[in-house]
Image (tube, rainbow, N blue to C red; front, side, top):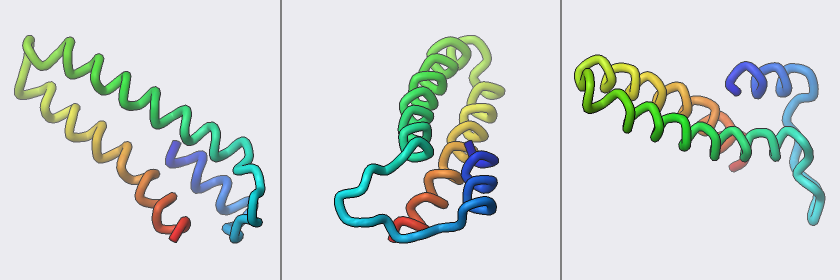
Length: 79
């Protein structure tokens, strides 16, 4: 998702949205990714945390960090 956001910004730039305009396909893909990311991280945590806690926490931290970077970029350009 981070690569998608960076490529989209590089190709089309960042512009202020028009009033009452549709958000467009990139925004819908980002929202879909957010939902899927939460579900996949929850599944990973539920499956691996009881088995190998130390390693699972490392991967969990990496997943959360990797998910927060695109979210932070969107929030930065949204405000």
